[in-house]
Length: 262
Image 1 (cartoon, rainbow, N blue to C red):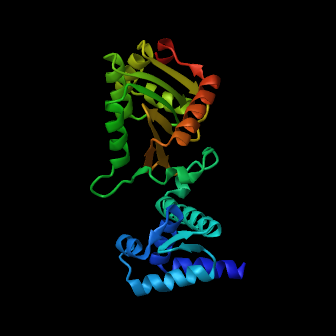
Image 2 (image 1 turned 90 degrees about the horizontal axis):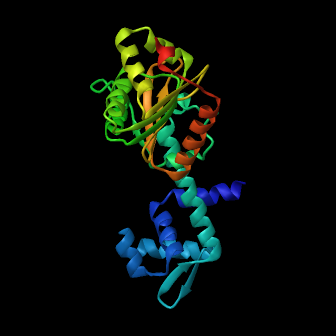
Image 3 (image 1 turned 90 degrees about the vertical axis):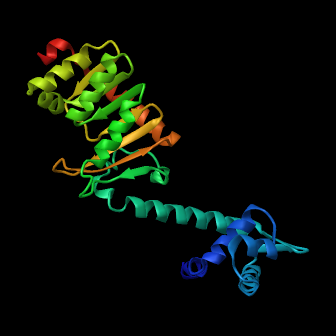
């Protein structure tokens, strides 16, 4: 274990080492090519290549260097580690709000996701991001513990105009909250009555996930219901998980009718 950690440290202490090994794992390079791509001096490259050769991480043929099979193994593993750490650093402040028990996909799939958080100047930034996605979407499917006024209003307008198909499963508490206010109840009734919309109800929903055309959108709240962030991505594995999750809730939901909203 200690020797392995020392090798990790050896690589991690030099971005040039990491980059040279990555480049050589992709294809053969001359020292001049490595200098051009990394910006490292010839003296630095000489030390790096010597260190790599001592570890049998590289092979040389004429003026060209390439990664050995074990060098490629190290490069792939270190790249994976970097991606994991980079993703973890992006999610670190959000992990307390992620419904991790429900997320049946590798969190590395969120490496390139768009993360939107509230700020003093844009306290509703996550919700605004959702509304931007919704307004131009043709197909929307969701499972959520909440159905807020802004989202409901956009869905009502889009489905009433025949510009959007909508399917949603919500907690009973979320529907009851809407039904208590006359204006929100009116929007909800129009959505339920729309030919392009179906609304289902279950007792509880532990997450808020939505597919907006090809985008998966996650809304993150804390235990007090305060909006903390949103995450959206077009990653196919996350999309597959979202579709399966929504389908599962659909199979167990009770369809809401206009009479139920009266």
